[in-house]
Length: 320
Ligand code: F6P
Image (cartoon, rainbow, N blue to C red; front, side, top):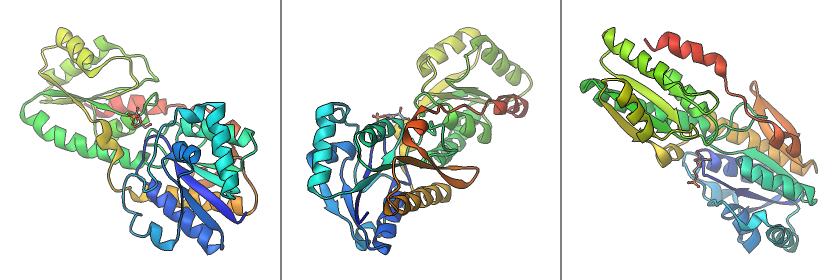
């Protein structure tokens, strides 16, 4: 292929810019043309395209967000939207595209692929909810952002001898909560992959306080079917703790990507261009145990992420 496109789609994730940079510079190195498609599938439908040169991706490697902008496109879910997108690709002579996004974006990519468009997916989401790859771009930065928040919350929580409930993102996946909770020393972790036992949690917190702990921290994933306010109310009923709640929300999506996220973005975007260059497409690119892998998009979309539940006993063991 000699002319390809790249778009970022769904929620932005730190490292998307590193992926754009790697894709653009790999393509240009091979004398391929690369077109930036703005606002994800929306830009594909509207024909919002711009040529990318070496300078267009200068000074973005360390920045969060995405210079191509992103969107969640309702229109792209319709047949009409998809046909319009394909029409624009053909008009512009774009032979294949790279889609950087999460599972919703991948479903769109698989649909385009079914319709005959050469597509490669690279995993861009803070949620880490894609089963075919060990990590997604943005997840490591989000976990580190949560850790920073935990450190700051600990200062005030311990000074006031309180309990803080912190809600983190992740959609239906508990990975951000689980990993930030374990590495941040949380006393309780609530993830959608496990049932919530309020009595058990309350007893654990009370027991800790009785043993001389002066504060505690609970991390709750947003996908757990109880709001932070409800959780506080339920724990208020069961304990004498002084509880505060914090929802970290979009702060988790910003910030300079960590080295791990930049590496994952660089490796997967580079591989995506190499595949298109060799006329190989219809794949999702990711990493498994540190190795860059490719898997048919349809298959990758169907793999559900399993939570690392073996970590749970360790959390109980260590948060004492
Ligand atoms: O998928 C990334 C994510 O940040 C989720 O963790 C969260 O549930 C969702 O996006 C929020 O989406 P929006 O930006 O549309 O509010």
